[in-house]
Structures are given as C-alpha cells and as structure tokens.
Amino acid sequence: MTEIITRLDDLEKYRIVLKKRKIAVIGYGNQGRSQALNMRDFGLDVIIGNVRDSYAEEAERDGFRVTSIMDACKESDVIFLLVPDEIQPEIFREMILPYLKDGDTLVMASGYNYFYGYVSPPDYVNVIMIAPRMIGWGVRDLYLKGKGFPVLTAIGHDHSGNSKETLVGLCAALGVFQEGGCMVGSSFKEETLLDLLSEHSWAGAILFIFRAYYEVVTELGASPEAAILEMYGSGELAEIAESMKDLGLFKQLKTHSRTSQYGQLVYGPAFAGDAVKNMIRENAMDILNGKFAREWTNEQNSGMVVFRRLHEISTEHPMEKKEEELYKLLGRAKSK
Image (cartoon, rainbow, N blue to C red; front, side):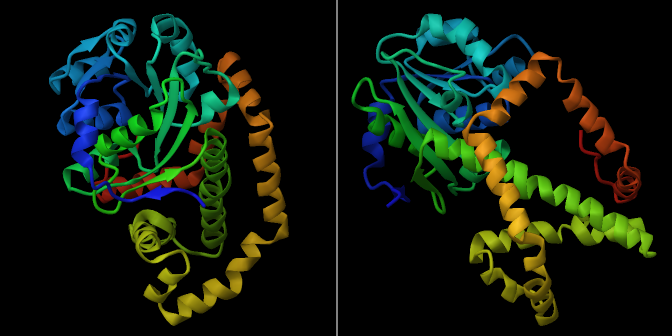
C-alpha cells in the first residue's frame, strides 16, 4: 500500500537535524521562491543560487544571500534543483555536478530529468524527490495560512543511509504537514507518468473541448461573451474544482441541480469512451518509452520552431480576440 503521511508528532526533532544542514535553492522562480521562504520560516539556513537577473534581485529584496549556482553548491550539502525542466540538464552538468561532494543531497521537484537520465548524479550523492501537487505561489500562500499541500516523494539513491529522514524533514520544512497536506510515497517513474499524462490528456483536452464548444454554440447563435462566461470566465469552473477537492469527483455532483446531474451522467460517458481510453494508453506508452521526451528534446535543440508556431496558431483563433475584449471590459488583466 502507498505510504501516506499526514502529520508529524516529532516535528522539532526534524527541525533540529535540518538546522545543521546548509540548503541551496537553485532557481528563484515560482517554486524556488515559495520553497525557499517556507524553509527559512521553518528555521533553516537557506541560500539562493541564481544567475544575475530579475529573479536574483527579487531574492535579495526578500532578504536572501544570492550567489552563483557554483558557489551555492560548494557551500551547501542539500541542493534543491528548481530551474525549469528544459534547462536542468545543462545547468546540472556545467554548474552543479563538478561541485557535488560526498554525502550531498540533490532534491528534485519532478521525476522528468532523473527518470529519463538527463540528470545523472554520481553514486556518492543522495537523490530524493519532493514534487508538490500545487502551483508555486500556492505553496507559499497555503503555508502563510497554516495549511499544507500534497507532495509526491521518492528516494532515487540513498548513499548516506539517512535519505528518508532528510526527505520527511524537508517536507515538514516546506509546510506539507500543516492542515490538509500529505506526503505520498511515489517514484520518479510514477510522477513523470502522472504529471505528463495529465498535462497531455485531460488538461490539454479541456482547452480544445472548450474551443470546440465555443465554435458550435456561436454557430448556433450564442454570443461569444456568454459562451466564454459559461465555460470558465465566470469562475464557476474553479468552484467546481474546489468541490472536487473537498468532496470527491462524483460526490460533488450533489452541489449541482438535478437537471445538471442528469445531463452530466447521461451524456458525459460519450466523451470518455474506448477510443479516448485507447488514446490515453498510447500517450502513456509514449511517455514511459521515452518517445515524448525525445521529441521534446529534439524540439528544444532545433530552436522550438514548432512550439512557437503552435502558440501562434492558438492565439489566432477568433475566440482569443473575443476573450481579450471581454476581459478588458471586466477589468481583468490579460494573461502574459
């Protein structure tokens, strides 16, 4: 059975142990900033390793000492690698690997690069994963509210024999064990599969199902503004997601009208039949056998021409213009 820890009765023991460690957070983006601030509030000694840019300036404004990535690794024995997946391999090879010491612990926030072998730490280093199931700013916001969040965790290599203690302690420092949070035992393989497959299947499908919905209802005479508000612009979708979190996927149906419940239960299965399941299975195999990772790496190496063009195509749709006009009218900032 999967190990799930929801609280620690000996929190102070872990705080005392970790206070003897020097923590380096490499990258001060959304996750880096939130995790660094949470660990500092927990009482840990945290420095930031970052190139000289606006993120480094923000870290200094937040009161952190900021050094080069190389110097941060030299000084520390626990290293959080929190730069984006696509630049992690190069950063690791050139700025981290040469400075790793016997017994250091490398902390990954996802399974991607370790599972595919793009980041391969030496055997004298401990490797663990703490993968928040929460967006970066939420990690900090929940911490300040005294609330926790779920994380998937794994031990990739336990050179020193104390990686489990380090893993649990760092989860505590991040605020995982505050109200509502939990540490879930996983693996680098599982995290990679779940994360990528959710992005490729239901998360990606929602975007294009919404666009198809928009095209159909506007063809039938519905106004673009009403269609956008109905799908997501009103915020009702966020409330439904919140109900799913609190009540469960199908138990939240009771918060809808009976007419709505009947319609969802009758017509919903048609959007998730065997054809869709087969597509999900095929996508899952592309993730596990490395096909998607190879394609994404090749896309990066070729200058991301296809990636940029797909973004351009998505913004050329008439729905984007109507959305921008509506959000301007409502006083909302257009997403960057």
